Length: 95
Length: 493
Image 1: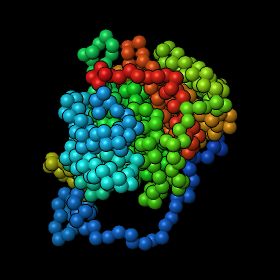
Image 2: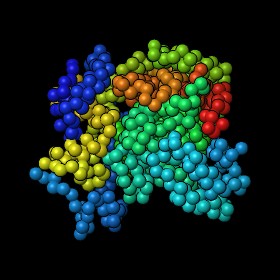
Image 3: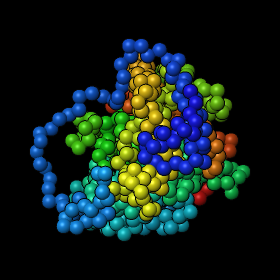
Image 4: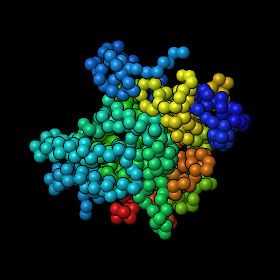
């Protein structure tokens, strides 16, 4: 497997990262090096081996759906790029 | 002896005997931070907060109030932990100026034990790196220099390079870091400090800026094993706000600390004897095994057959989780947003992320995006998760025979800033000895064990069973006693 500039442009598009032409060649070279190392996994026999998504139990705890805080309006708004009428003001994100 | 050369244990004793105050101790560290600012160990210094916390600690100590484990002790905090009302950047331009309105659980625990925060320590951007050269806020310089080459600046390891350099250069008594694939243990080895990554689930991840959620764990850097035990005791514990937090009591690791390891079985995994390892690191490893044998432990040859696949597995799993976690940085609600003219919503996302993230982060996001994308998920991500199971099984099997495992921490000593950057894979190889235990979620600690011919510190790694940090501390204490590592970087010697 070898990624070319076009593949990198596609991946970058999926990742929503702007990559110019020069960069995509460099990323292609670097990613090919990394995938060269990764390819060795193909020699491992994993037939019937379960997947491990994380450590410990797979049943995440659940909790009562209770409200345990509140009145945090100022804290919630403190990182808003802009706010007005106690609301976040953000660019239009539905096209 | 200067105040800043005291261990945490000694500083605590001096404070309780009122030989000096926390304000005096804290001021001595603030002075050191000013003097050694060129190391770039801190992104944000918080001297005002530190002195106020120190003065409150002094009042508690004076009135003999119940004091915490870290009462009046000045510490550095990796800038990956959200700290209330103090800028938290993750070493990224993306979060420059981000001021969290809440405190991470780990730092909240640290403060509830009375700690004093000197500042937020530098790190590789979003904790991605092994040399602390990917920070938007500049590289960190290791206080150690090569014996015959005092002008070349070396890396402090990474990603927690500011935290390791701060402890080694006496810019903090101890510090907090995080370890995803080795980001505490490798920098500890590079700076002659002790660093432990506890079992996954010991420390809450709540409020820690996420990189790879199934791997990220907080842990301390300290001057010795006892100090590391005190630090870990202070920050660990169940947290209902982290769904993967382990609901187990936190043992009193410090009071149980016992360097007597008679009868313990220590595994030496043959797969860690890699070709690329310099012979002096191999010899140090053999010496470490000899020390443990002389201390009464039984040395057992073991096999962890999937070791050589751990790095490849890691470079699928960690980037996959990273690409998912970092998708939140879109410039809409917080963090950096492009100021360029934009033509569409996607254009805004793409420009924002291109400007906000550095090269290493972009590489990893793209790897992750690719291995999770349609048509490649089975070949890469599912395959890696299966190999992860095999790596974890290797350890389970080994721990039927042994109580702990001894390995070198890293296959190299600290290298120069600018070395190992031509090819990302060369840099990734730094973590070959630390990544396997991360994949299995097991605890691991690096203890300084000797100096290289260049006069630089080398570490040995002790791996333990899940939730058996006590044995890791005990074996570490035995290594520490035998190694008698007293060397210090010239600037603090």
